[in-house]
Length: 153
Image 1 (cartoon, rainbow, N blue to C red):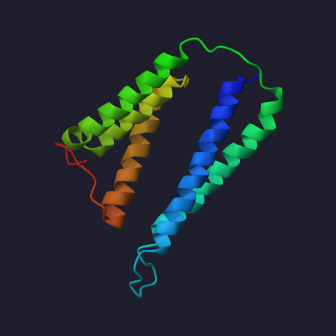
Image 2 (cartoon, rainbow, N blue to C red; image 1 turned 120 degrees about the horizontal axis):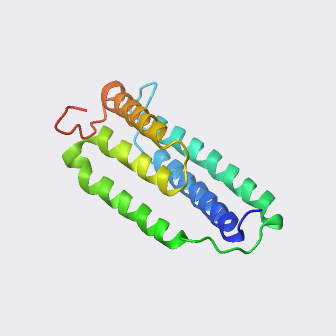
């Protein structure tokens, strides 16, 4: 049985994601057209569609689970929220110093551990692969410069 607050938070997060998708699409349509096959609005629109789809999925999931949710207290929930904020702030502060791949890996591992992910050592490999993949796609393929840090990645 799920905690009612978690189900409501999932629904709220889904609604915020859906709202963000709408804002991104509206902003993307205001970008100037550059008469090319892939103008500047293509990537934000794609991200907005994916963000909206995930938001709708979370809203549907919350609606399905809400009737069976119980009122329960989760021990240590507040310290996890504070710790997640600290991990996110550390990511922002260390990003220009250590580079995207290292700080992105730290953000992934820290958030996953705080949210109760199993297999702790595997998280490091997943986090590094995800961060390195994002760095490769955005920095090398698309050409959007990400902080590379002292190691060049």
